[in-house]
Amino acid sequence: MTAGKAPGRTGNRVFSGLSFGAGVLIMIVLALVTAFLVKEAVPALTARSADLEDVSFMKGRTFWGYVAPLVFGTLLSSVIALVVAVPLSVAVALFISHFAPRRLAQGLGYLVDLLAAIPSVVFGLWGFLWLVPLLSPLYAWLTTSLGFIPLFADYTAPAKNILTASLVLAVMILPIITATIREVFLQTPTLHEEASLALGATRYEMVRQAVLPFGRSGIISASMLGLGRALGETMAVLMIMSSGLSINFHILQAGQHQTIAANIASQFREAFGMSVNVLIATGLVLFVITFAVNSVARWIIARRSEFSGAN
Image (cartoon, rainbow, N blue to C red; front, top):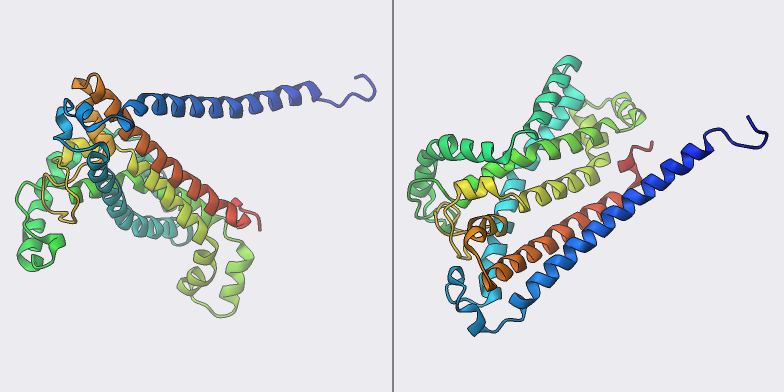
């Protein structure tokens, strides 16, 4: 070996160059996608009302009048999915990381991770063929018992509404949220847990005093990642929910809501001319929403260095 020459210096340079190149490539691809969406969306964003009259699926609406119900349906379905999935994910992550025996915890971890490998079309079939008939009696009971609340009013079978689609979304985002929260809980400093137990705390009190405060930012950021996943889901929502362009909270009524991604999938095959530009413009709106969600998640993660596992 030549004197003064560090071992592996060439390999370090190659690895550093490849890593830097991969990072630059990702930024270039993101910039190209953004440029394409903006270029194709500009005709729809700047079009006059007369230019949009030939777009049949807009039903005489302006562009923003058409996008607003889609944004509302996208956000509503994603928020409902988060409300259902996050508590379940926290409970499952706590059980796997701090309560279950080691062998059982490993098996449950594998099963939860396997949910992420199931294609969305399978979730759509499961929701359409099994969940919709199963939930119909429950929705009928909710309308009968709590119909005075607008949220549960006027249910009519079948249960192809935004609530059913949101429950399927909750199952779909459960693995990514659970896996992230589980890893955060496992990184809780052992000294914090032992100190809490040494002061006489029960296991439940130890979790409340040491584990949950440590994992708070992880729970929030995992929820944001799940939200980003739910915002862009297409096939499962398209197969389950009857589409509509209304802005309301009648979550048990079919034909009231639609999401941006599902709407693009349903309309794009027969679109041409200005119709394509309108759909791409709605995709740009979804892109901005998803980018904002991911940016907020990264900001939350960066707020606390403990999330990285540093003790």
